[in-house]
Length: 440
Image (cartoon, rainbow, N blue to C red; front, side, top):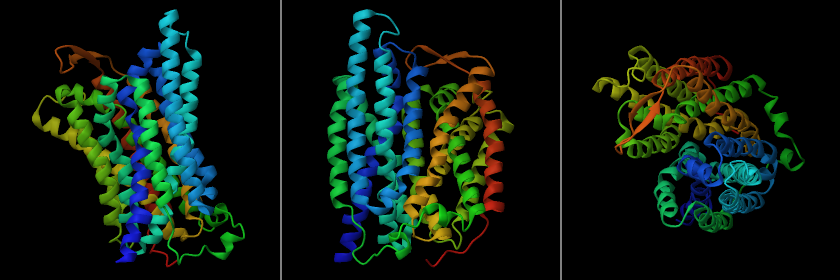
């Protein structure tokens, strides 16, 4: 009984506390327009704060993976401090930018505020995101040796579910107090949550790091034993994130485009549930497979089929003019969200099956560099296509007014993502291949 309690108290609960906190980075769309209006900048200018956050998440994971490997207590404390400090700093610069904008009325009078938001939300929070994301993963796999996928899926699902949990809270705080006040309050709340997670997190008492690691073996040396496999996993992971972000970034506008503007909030919450469910469901399912790469093949094939059906039926371009088209578009959003989430939760266990547990945090961190690059390319790819293909039309915003959407632009995004999904599937078959689980 004591061992079972330790699994949850020392691994699962602290992992959820960490991931449910840092996962709120995906709530950016809730307050991005309000920040832009408050400090006097365009939404496109402020959007870079989110892109920088994802970029530095991946890069800090890649460069600080060895720190996580050697000392999860140090890395989880770094995560708590940086994430909370980044949120508090973002709140301060929103306040400062609003004050300057109100005083001058000049759109670019608060450049310092915009740069401050980039640094705080992007760079400082990004370091907290990367170290916080990595810190509990290896610990979970060590405690749950027989169900590694279920364990990591549970934590990573917390990262995905954070948006659904925090969104209504953030909206209520924004409405009652204001945006910068919300950031300061949540900075304190999330620091407490993450600090408790930091205190609880611990590896099993009987686990001893391999001697080679104690002597300073580098993760890159382990990767070199199977370089083609790592390249395949990295590319597959990168493409899945890029395609997911390309569609998810346009999700609300696609929902409005097909005439469901009044249900946009509810449907966004449902897609968030699929995102979290994919993280837990696909990783738990992979535990029952001889080769975890099989689950990637399934996720990618489902994404290709769902995308292909909407392309063939022109479900978005024809603005969901029938019930069947509406269903197909919604299925596409659900499938892509589930596959996007599942891609994250299965990476650490897939890596451990090929490279063993030695230096797995560092190897996982290097792999997360794919997330960093995808964070810059996914959203921007979709924005570029929508901005240069098709034209905008007016549709109901669900509140008695109108909003502009670009159905042809959103449909065109699918032509690019389906090609990329096929490339990822080829990587899964021919670069990663079918491998039996490692005994290490």
